[in-house]
Structure formats: structure tokens, C-alpha cells
Image 1: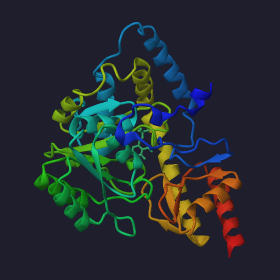
Image 2 (image 1 turned 90 degrees about the vertical axis):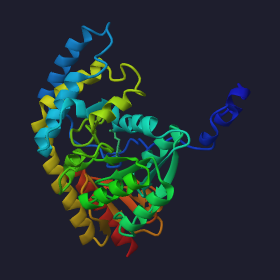
Image 3 (image 1 turned 45 degrees about the horizontal axis):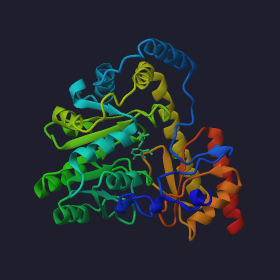
Length: 372
Ligand code: PMP
């Protein structure tokens, strides 16, 4: 028994780059108000729950067989959703799906990154980009941002020219800051990346449905090195489903199939996602509500004397604190879980239901009174 206790990760022959590292994970704490992982606070509507049960029942009758390896029906419906919402004609051949956009990103790095290659992101940004890079043996380059968290284009272009990365990540709206990246900036980064290598530019649009502006998806036209990554975890309120997807030139879709595990998307997942896509209209109604709650959070935080970073996502970054982690703990003591992403001076709150947001606002107003 003693031996089991003292035997740990470092006693195993794990890869050198994994030594001493900890796994990704926001705390999953059991508190009344959880506003820490950018989830959608609204459960799926009951008619959709029924439709999922129906579709999954049908799929269950065929579970002795492997699922459709190419997920053709699902990719067709995702392409239709993208066409309907962006006005840009997207074909099933432009679309690829996997278990969450994290898996999409992993497949992209397995295909275009890997040992001896590098990827760059402009930080602070979604920390999984760097972690998936590490997991796939891809070298990670941390590119800069301006103090206001916008992308510093000149510095980014310089970093791309200098490091000649194989993959460039642009997150818009950015997590954890909420910052949208203008189309002109993405185009300039794409040009810089093509001049330097040419490399693959991944535009991570996990939160784009909450944005004031438009999706950059139409930019894939005539740009075969541009990939737009999406997810059903946020706007569709289906984080538990694990369904992410990308839109790109069909050659990119062919390429990621070189690394995807056969039958990676279970028949149950495909059936559930298809049911959800039948209810797109209802699901996206909550998006409008969340956008206005996001704006209310930002306004009330400002009114209470906090700083906020302008947000195009379903969350708001707020500060500034000498010790953000201490404030995170004080908010938690009041029954509200927000996120400390490790950005010095800042915390992040996800837009929840109006009641949850009120609980959060009460907590932070109270803190302000106590400390002033
Ligand atoms: N990209 C960004 C920017 C995210 O914030 C997240 C989730 N936090 C993801 C991708 C991954 O989401 P999922 O795997 O649930 O699609």
C-alpha cells in the first residue's frame, strides 16, 4: 500500500514535456451560482429533450454497427446552419466535426503541427491552445497582446515573421478577455503567415454567436489555409454533448481525416447533435437574452466601480485587483463561482440567468463597499 501512495506520475516513463505539469481544469465546485466555465445557463427545452430521446432510441437499434465514420448527415446540417447564419454558402465538404472543438483543434495540430513544428497564439487567450500543442508535441510560442487585450498587429506580424510558426491561432471573440478581433487584423495575420511559411491560420470562433459583429467564416473563400473552428458547447447550450466542428477548404477536411480515429463520433453523439440542430431557432433565442445579460453585467460592474474589458462573448472580464485570486475566493465565499484565468489583476464571469447575475452583482457590490 505504501508503495502505491508514494508512486506518482514522475515515477512513470512519461514524456519529458509532460513532467511536472498539471492537467487543465476549472474547479467543478458545488456552489449555488456557477459562472466559471462559459456554459449556457439554460437547460435544453423539453421538446428538444424529447426529440433527442427519440433520435437516440433509433440510433440505439443500430449500436451493434459502427457509426457513420464521415458523419455525412451531421456535416450536412452543420453546413446548412453555417450557410443560414453567415450568408456564405458552406457545403458538407467544407465541414468537419469532432467531440468538442477541443478535439477539432487537436486534430488540426496533429495534422499541421507535431514534433519539430510550432504554433503561436496571442495571449492571454484560450489556454488549451498551448496545452493541446504540448500534447501533440508541437512547440508553443506565446505571442503578445496590447495592454487593452486587443491584438498588437505589428508585434504579431513581427513574431510570425521571426518564428515562422506552422499554425497560428486567432481567438475571436477571445477567451478570457471577450475581445473581438477585426476582420482586417485576421486578414493581415493570414498574409503574414502565408509570407512566412505558409502556415495554417485557425480562427477559433467558439463564442461568435454572442458577438456584436459577424462571423469571419466567409474569409475561407479563396484562402485554403484558413480554418474556422466552432462549437455547440456555448450558443447551443450543449456543452455536455461534446460537439465541435470546423469550416475550411475541403482539402483541410481531407487532411484531418489522416489523423482522426476511425468512428470517433459515436452514433449517440451524432443523433443528439442532429436533434439539437433541428431546434436551432429555439436554442439561439437564448443567445439574445445572454447577450443583453452580458451587456448588463458589464454596465453594472462599471457602475459599481470596477473596470471591464469590452466583451463580444457570453462572459465579462473584470478587475482590476492587486490580488485577483483573493477576490475570487471572496466572491466564492458569497456562493458565486467565477473564474481566475491567471490573468494578473483580472477575473472572468460568465453571463448566467438574470437571477444568477444578480447574485454575482450583489456579491461584487458588497465587496466594493467593504474595501472602500
Ligand atoms: N475554444 C475556446 C475559445 C473556448 O473557450 C472553448 C471552451 N472553453 C473551446 C474552444 C472548447 O470548447 P468545446 O471543446 O466544448 O467545444
